[in-house]
Picture 1 (cartoon, rainbow, N blue to C red):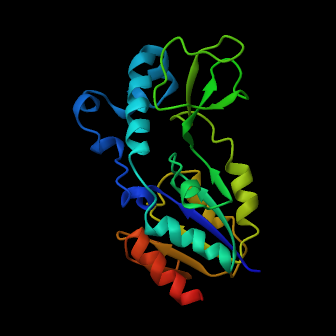
Picture 2 (cartoon, helix red, strand yellow):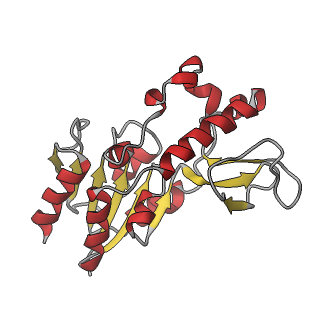
Length: 224
């Protein structure tokens, strides 16, 4: 069974109604993204950071996987599929995909500020000051913030090295180290890139300039 390795970005979830930071509006227009997505912001005003992620989490619970997510699940009927995602939502899992690696953390999980190995599923969408782990440390969003290392990048590189087909969906290819994963794949394998506004790519990449769900339908037809 051939293996498809998929790298997904924000465009994968856009059709589900997942808003970006810039789309949040309201209170968040008062803050630079570094204020709510960096260790410095957390130290300065943790209550604002918690509320930002609470609102993102609440919005996620109102969203559902889109057709693109479901097509990736369908591909498991014919291929071995592993997904590496830059997204922090759980829409791939809710669509039924069984092998998903999150590079930038997971919105519905929280972790200890004193012991990063203590990670918990959050019940509901609210995380508050005073919510602590079993060792008494404050819990924080289980998100990779700006300036923090990406713990899963080495694992992602190893996964990419096993690809028979490499598929990129809905990413600008501007965010590193994730964007560098396309150079970790075996030489000569087919590479497909689905995005309505694709970034410049090497000549060997098949570009499908469509939104995620539409482009995945095109991709599915081309390889089955």
